[in-house]
Image (cartoon, each protein chain N blue to C red):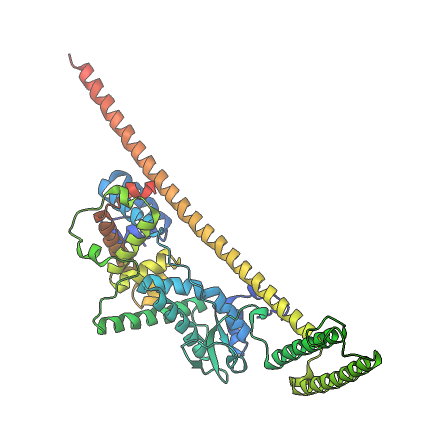
Length: 257
Length: 204
């Protein structure tokens, strides 16, 4: 860097434009551009191009990239990029959705189906022992004794209870590691906390990005204002010079006989 | 490092996260991705001008960075290293495009408009909108040689110093300034051709 400026040194103007020049060179450029219209115009044109560039924003993209380990890789959607090699198997995947939007494990789906089936059966039985409530049991006539249907219903209920017990036992045996209600609750709580932390991190990052953008824009604006002031000062100086010249001229003319 | 497990990720520096990632901590690397995926995507988009391809470049950048972590000794800033990978990938992409001999225009670029560069200038009324200006800038940037475009993108949108750009592009600092000057000059002329005069821009 030098403390002088050669007229037409456009790379030095670029240094000035991006505020990456020594203070002495900066002062030299400011002084020069107040006198040299060509360099001042060149600088203004470069600044104009920069202003136009500021309007160009890339489209928003929901990237959501993350690296997943081998254990998770089998469960989550893989990108087309394949797998890496640092850890046993790695890949880039999109972030998973919320825990409640994830598909349920097979054992949980089976449990839900069985519960629904059992509830349906139970409702059917209850309706069956209510006189007149079920289309399968005639409301009149055939029943001669009140105790017989009650006994039959109790027998059916006992059989149903045994069957449900057996099914639930099978289900518990089929479930991996027999996850209890408390464990399930803990897992859901952990997932919720993880989701909350992720959202907080995302929010903090977005905030930091906004602050950074704001700061950089402010710096650009300040630099622009400073340069504009410099130009205005230059223009004012030129006007004063013109006025002085005009005054001198008038004085010379007035002194002539 | 000096950061315990209870310290939130966002207070860690890139170097901390890189060190932990090298130790096999995937969460740390994912945090680095979270920090840098948008800037890298924006860089790729502005250099190659296509949304889908920019996204692919972004993904590939992080995948390569992850694979190469053991070889990253911190000789440069992590972000500079990422930009270097992304820039190389963009160059590869452009080389492939040239080889395929198909003309790839940036999204939103009207080929007829480009073909009629010598044609009549659009009316000022049609130009007074920020969106149109953005498209015009994108078109003008697409016309620049890759080195000039990359230098402008790194300087204007990623705030790099001349020296950082010189290191990334592997050229002297004076060359960076020349590329910036030439690129800005071409942009200015191209935009003026479409009626994007400095006065008009200031009005927007």
